[in-house]
Length: 253
Image (cartoon, rainbow, N blue to C red; front, side, top):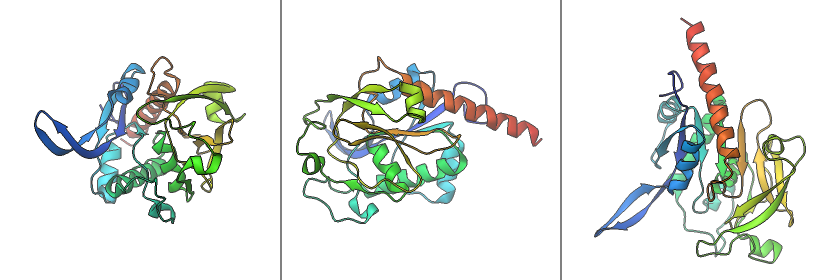
């Protein structure tokens, strides 16, 4: 059910486009770890996967018309060209189609007030969308690999929220963050608010100020779904967005 209908809110989740091997097949495929959409479903939403694809304004608007909320998920590093830098030796090879697709989606979503939740790469992408830059290899900056153990091992780190932010209202003064990132926000994009940091001073949360829901965390709340607060927050915001859309549709008749 889309934003003009009745029912559970539809949450779009961006996903990977990578070469995948399965049962003798070796093909490009769109995919996403199930824990992302399980978080949305457990929180009361309907999950819709959004594979990377070429976009223009009409395509973006058509996609967003079908959604009540948007999650920009984790994944490979953004192309440093998107924020005016040359690649670091440790930066992933570019996934330019995904970068372009997600940047267009997040800008379109924000322009219409569609609720947005960014996760890991999603935080970095939000920052770049607002003109910010990234640390391409965090160990060079802080001197350790505590945020990225590698080989699929997540590191639990305490983060402190910034008083007065939406994230602080959702999580309280602090939270345990399951981290898996070797990049992080450097220069904060114009107009964004830092909403959490860790003990090293690394930016672990960003948000867009104002009444609309646009929150991003550098960690992975989908990794262990015993804490659904962030997923409930995007689903609740999507419910409100859909309700407002229905009221607006009725009033225009």
